[in-house]
Amino acid sequence: MKILLFIISLFILLQSPAAAETVKTVSKGNEYGGPTKEITYSQDEEEFKVILKTVIYLDRNEKELKREIYYTAQASGETGVNKSTTYFNELKRATRMDVYYDDAQALKKGIRVMAVFFDNEGRKMRFEYDYTAEFADKNGVSRSVEYAGDNERTTRSEKFYTAKFINEVGIDKMTVYYDSDEKVTKEEYSYTGRAADERGFSTMVIYFDNKGKETKAEYYKNNRLIKMTLP
Image (cartoon, rainbow, N blue to C red; front, side, top):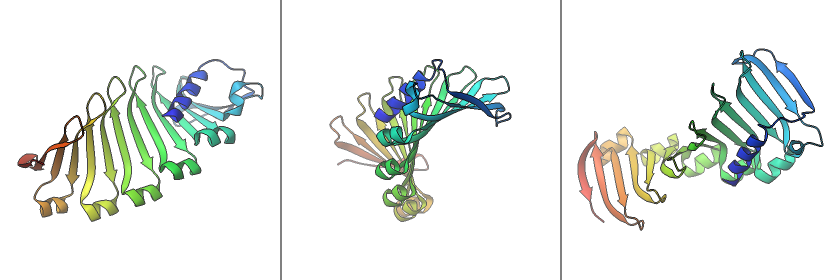
């Protein structure tokens, strides 16, 4: 989270005009129908030690729709991030930010890219994590998603498993639900067709009290409750 706060703080800083050393057009026709501009900074500017370059994608009406920031080796060494990409809507509000980790940080955390999605008020509403091949192979998780409420606290998380894990365990997705204090209230496991046939159910839901103790488990088949067990 400290890394994300750094990126967002830097993003806010770049909203202010700066006497950039170089602003040049690198393309007159990008995927949005407008020019692409590249910005580099002079040594006496605050951004110089942090940013290698900024690339801005404009539409045919000169509205910015995407911004890529490439970070210096010094900044990457401190944060583990070598690039971020921010997407904007027609109202110039950020809707998504992709944060790319360098090889060392990716190896440490197991995350290649973290995508952050914002609502119309700028609140962080969803996080998506794309894991490295090594992490996915070791842990069986290829991607995960966290959803946040209006107070930006996690309300739900999802894990999506690799084909290898699915074949061995039979679970293709796990969903965890949280209360307002971010304590787990229930876990939901979805089984594949073959695994469901073998077990006699397609979904298992485990409930927890506010101390994290299991209170009951429910089993569903074709969205119908077929069994309930108590600990």
